[in-house]
Length: 220
Ligand code: DX5
Ligand code: ZN
Image (cartoon, rainbow, N blue to C red; front, side, top):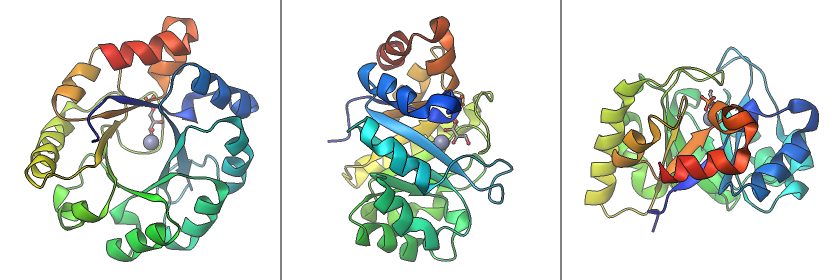
């Protein structure tokens, strides 16, 4: 059951000059997932990493690679990310012509399927697909950069999705992503999130004590 709280630190806030070591440190510090933000400079105004880097990072941990694709088009890259070692492949419905086709492409690779909604995107984009996916990623910042301010207006959307998921008795992760810190993490959990993504809080708070920051997000 997707009920215990999982922490998925975003390596977007890590030191890109030593990403392998950073992934290994997150593993040792108790991360449940490793959140990998893939950006193409087209769907979002930033460019980060691609499948080649994921392939190189794979040997550094056995933990779940929670890959957040902020790319468009997306279908033609699914297989590459799957073969590179992604475990959960999350895409934006706004980035594909047909959400069901993209879901099926990810399932064909025997990977878990996530769908992500930007802060202003409606749950109507995903309501018909909830029984076919493993994770919903609710963005609480506009996609593209770490270190942005949490947008509390997404909490109602999270509550609505939690209500639908509970009524349908679906076992899917509800992940919140963007501006999560020690002050707002309880609000997100109480609203139904069971996976918290965090980049800047995990890497920057308490002089970068990863273990302490991960456990504070889990327990606060
Ligand atoms: C933003 C990314 C987020 C971001 C989270 O587009 O999807 O995962 O890296 O970083 P913080 O926790 O610093 O907002
Ligand atoms: Zn993300």
